[in-house]
Length: 337
Image (cartoon, rainbow, N blue to C red):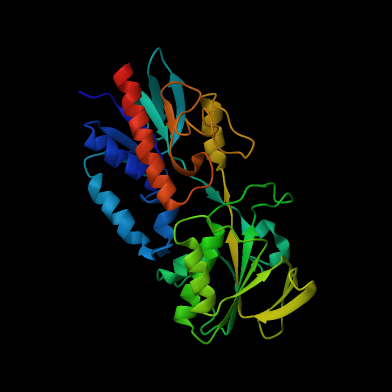
């Protein structure tokens, strides 16, 4: 009988880890605080760079972990270190003894209301990347203009921003903006679409091709410069002031919709869990790995491991690969014990 492994977090990192642990003969116990599996990816419509339906990824993972023990709408109250095991107490009263714990607690999205100059929560047609993605997926509670003639995307909202308290790059925002800009052009071919950016960070496979296609095939306009202020006109359109730093000129444009690319932050609950088991938090607020090169999936405490965005911003492929690597680390650790 293989020992218990508890996975905290039922996003794609936790689900992929549960899948790999099942393959190795373990009985993973997956703890998810919400009523569903899939995490943030379950809110997404399509994933870059291949426009893969996010629902397809989630459904395939669900099929692969049918034999795992899954607790939904369940949190972790506390974790106690015993002699060579851990005791995990859940909010539903269940107590679990295990030999290893995998943190796959993911991230929180920056609250765009904190950037008051952009008017999120004030103006009807200022939305976030998540809002737009939900709308693409059929959620009509998100208010989108019926036929927008002009749409703007603001990069780095709540990331790379000292005033927002987060100097880190969220890594996925540039590509998400480009993907969503293309999707807007596909739905509304006559619209003019603008991306306001500081600089573009397109590091991954096929990312540069995606960017070139957005300009060449879809006519998306890229403007280097921060948006400084957003106001609302009498007719409900948005007045956006920015600076075009390439041309060295101020810019003012009227838009029907503005999309804010909210950045990724370490969740408050994650920090609370870190305090409970005396794990280190790095300078960026995320969990601190044993090191940032060779032992990214390992914590400084024996038997506790990491996967996904709990240690920093990650793309979907990186998250899945890290979950697999974490499972191998767990397996090796338990074999040595």
